Image (tube, one colour):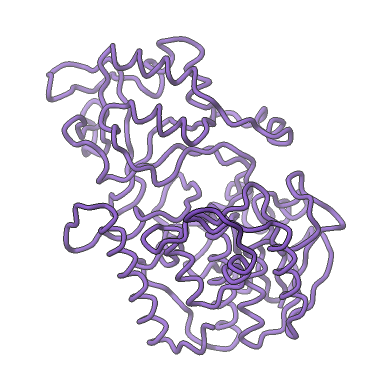
Length: 438
């Protein structure tokens, strides 16, 4: 059994397999070769931040870590052992964390490790967890396997907000020219509101792209950041993604000066994305500026817009909820290349891929978590064949099905969602035989 890539997902997958009696060969190309963002020779290297986000159960990240712990997570255990002071977040000493993960992996009797850059998909059972900066050789191999149209190399995503946080008094549902159903939520600007928004947008602070990302961005057309487009002139957005043509605000009976359209992100209608708002603004700037959009004054961002080098699959067309490749079930994928975004999300996908590959090898029923759990909701999101224009997603309370009862207080509502998730996880593990999954 081969696992390619010793990042967070690959280590979790190897650990899950080995703990179920499956001999694993874990491959990593470091230190033979490093990606442009990696520098440390150890496994599970954290590149962008040393934080694994919030610890409290009523947060999406805290809930996800609790579920991972229930499944015997290596990453969460090592993070807690190497934690540094970070308020309510779980942050780690990067080198100590990597060293501890590496030590545990290399000392496991069922795991052997090797150094190699794979440029072909190996024969036999394999989990591919090569990460968002997959080497060119492996990218080419994945393209040959899946088809070039199913592999993206740049993550240019617009922000996503929760439906319940949208001010319904300031928006209206309508399709442009009345074509089709009223599928879009429209946020109408007056001239004064638009001009104030425009000035803040063009002066907001952006994230500096890394050199290797700049080169790739030059050849990636069609993902121009909204703030860059705006700098071409005051009316550029009004004749582009914010054009009001074909829309009438029912509250005024007139066409707005400009309109931001929100499009449903999931079938449940709990999440909406800002159409045409690919952005490279810093996250606090996105919150500040985009909250100026009428109706989004108190918007809760399920994810912010991102624009960076990121190899990821069109997973809804390729993977099932086990993280197995449809039609080629000896091959599983794990990590950020599956469309889960974030450190712990990547690790969580590795756990599920490892458990389900082990179950497949041993003739045990797969572990399919209900979508009321955070891990189950993420697995469902990346494997839903009805999803169009797929973009990576991190853990957030908006991807969980709503509660049957309405709880107005957000902290109490999130706690109730988390408690429901933990209970659903317990029940699922009990029904499936807990000893099979730890």
